[in-house]
Image 1 (cartoon, rainbow, N blue to C red):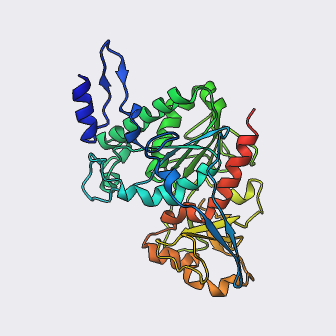
Image 2 (tube, rainbow, N blue to C red):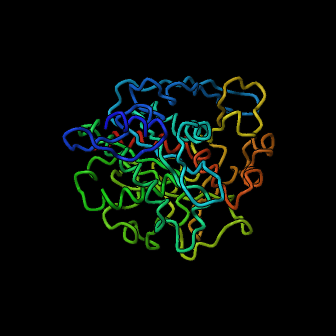
Image 3 (cartoon, rainbow, N blue to C red):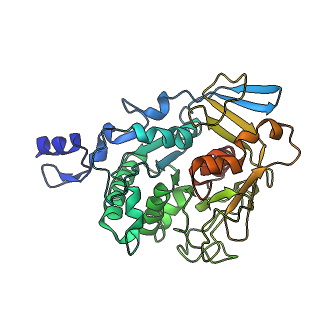
Length: 364
């Protein structure tokens, strides 16, 4: 039985098996089923150079060394977005090739290990084609298979973590997985909600519903939207787009829930820091020698009437003329999407890091 379980795992299967005595054994007890896990032999998030150069002005830059937090007081559980771009509905069955996972892992998650112990499981996610299945993706076996893996990984995280507080963090399909997790495990479990620092549900594109003008109701009655940086047990959610763009947005039918990160204790309307990596196709500013470069307070953010988070450049900033080639409008065109979905985290990551740190300090 044990030999057979290891064979299945080596093939990339993430189905639960049974050990002697009939006790369920999760494949996530193996470090190899995690992209990032504290103490694992291979922790990709701990291996990456995250040193940053902030572009403060056309002639001024600041180097910021990234340091992994030692013995932090909380954890982060991250679920990555869709990287399997096959048109055919299905699931990623072979998890041995993780090269496609690196981009979202590094651009969205890895920097958080400066604040928290970071857990990021591999999972048999849905292909992009699964989203076009008639009747909706949530009713498909592809969604259920992907969620079963995330749920099993979270169970293993709970086994390891004791009673530590934690952040749930996902983007796009990762957010869809976490919304299901919140519904099944948290909505009716006050004990788990007490441990929840916050849920970063980034890029849900309509998967989260909250009545207009309210902070709860709709999808959840007991897990509200965050309204202040010291709120805990709440959700931060938004879908970003180039501000005022009328041609490249999908009308949501009813306003999307929008939590503007800049209003949660930051500089209202101004994003703390937009961070890019040198392999994203964004022009690297002259003089930058690190893989990462940021633009503190260069971009603005505001929830628009349909609930999209509109991103723009701050008027009058002397860096704007120099950086027109990476304005939100141009980035949206380069990404080839109808929104800034792929860059949802790139623009707001400075605020998300700040918010999570304050929220964790505010836990009871």
